[in-house]
Length: 269
Image 1 (cartoon, rainbow, N blue to C red):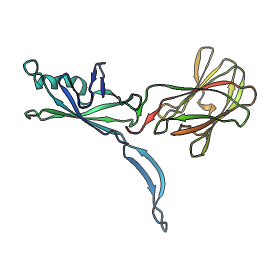
Image 2: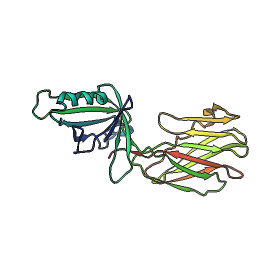
Image 3: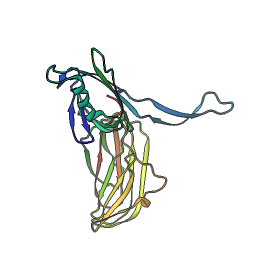
Image 4: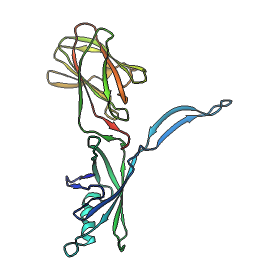
């Protein structure tokens, strides 16, 4: 595990390996977080009817033993060094490394820093709350394609374990008045996003379906403006699902190049 403080300081903590007086004994909270499921019950109907669900924030717990080099430093010295990274309410970024997947990152804030001051085996227990519960692979995935006037689909094999939004960029090389993005998830469910508006040659249209950062913007003559009103109100904000996703960007006429950019997200390690 690697810790990046809000001041830019970096602390490397290999699991069960003594480094500079710190021994990372245990990391908790890496499993998928609990989901809150909302349902409704009705008279004369057994059970309940599902309405919606959401995953809660992640609570990562860390236990670090303090093993000072006696005569050079003390337990108090080690504890003070950890304060620079784990002072309660401070923001930190955690990076987790393993042998079977790319490094993943998660951001959080320190909830507590607790230690038994007079223990014969001093250790620190740290609690970190992460509002976004997903671990993010920071390597940006970029898919290139072209619009089509046929029913041909292309496949994106998404290797994350939870759904992820994406940034769709359409680089106009001719005028266009409307298009539709069709998405068929691995279960075969079809959803679509419809766009209608005046787009000219050399315009660049960007549509983000990333949760918490959804938008539609276009750039013309070096000036970027919102084009959210171009998206039909009945459209779905598409997200890639774990597995093979079929994508088709339908537009009448000659093909227009586009890209889809996304980050892999993992619900647990």
